[in-house]
Image 1: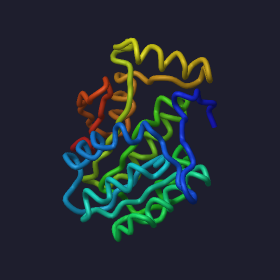
Image 2: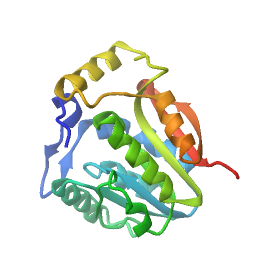
Image 3: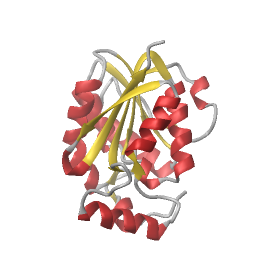
Image 4: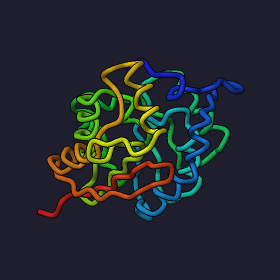
Length: 216
């Protein structure tokens, strides 16, 4: 597990097993709107690295005809996700799965998903770990599925704001192996894996990659 600065890893315990991340509250509406705009009307959705569970509850509530499957690798985060889910009582929100999304072969053990969401993750992990996650997520998509990636990225090798430069420096000081990934690199990985990505500018200098299978 990468070492993270306080600016990237704040999660405060609440009642029971729930954890609260202020950053999740700040961007939840943006992410809900993004996925509502890109999700199928019905189907199965997987969220990789669901964190505290604040986002997945909002997504499941906003899109009740989609079956949502949250995942995490840390036990305390799985417990937090399930605590939020239990409180919400949403029939389309499944229990959190333990998933190391960088592990080779996990896609073959799951029924394909119509939507896969990776939010605010790639800058927190090493480059090769990010590559493994993207490639495996591509394999887990259904034939008409969509992969949506959200978060902060470099643009053609450039950090576009003072806030981005400061945050990237904090990440790399905590762990030189992590930090912002380049948008060109992400597009190259997705294209090589058989997807056609398109980019969407998001608030606070974030980006969204929306990718489906390239027609043969």
